[in-house]
Length: 257
Ligand code: MG
Image (cartoon, rainbow, N blue to C red):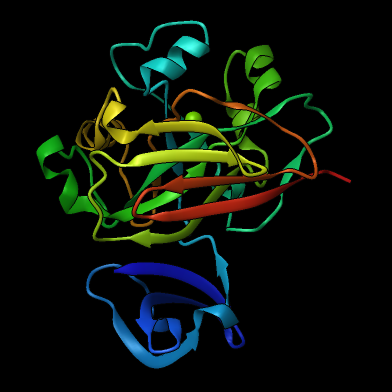
């Protein structure tokens, strides 16, 4: 099932996107998309609604250096165990919402990533049981003020600005993340192209590691790391992250006025 959140003429709603006779249709879900959703019976042509970030997370947990080639371009080797950090949930925005570059940073980078969306409260999940707690997968951009990441020595400011966590366009619940292409384009030019099979820690290991530290709640989002090819964005550009078989997340870039 393809789950999304939309702004409809009547407000905000969770929907399931399906193919209709005249193109994709957004069918309204009653309440929330966890468990087995029920439907209100209302629907809209997808073209008539605006997609929002597909989920409201209590937290966004990220894996650093989960692709060896990215660790190398950052000037080191990937650590043996996953390195995790948190982006505040206020950094989340949806498709087409501008990424706002703060005036305090000289270099704001894209990091295209596959994201896990958690489906139920959980703690101490074994890797083999990870699928039981995952609602689905979406596309993310782990936007980073690269200069501030180096200056601060820890990453809260560099990773935490409002708009620094675009998510979307939807959550795919029936999706095999083991070996799909991940691609980031800047103004249509391919800048990152890799495969999820090159992750150093796979989805099961990531869920086990993080849930061994903290309780995960429905809607929590885990960014699984970026491959090589990261680079800066400037105002007026457009960044698009595509995960094969899942979708494309596209956002324009602006400077904070
Ligand atoms: Mg990242």
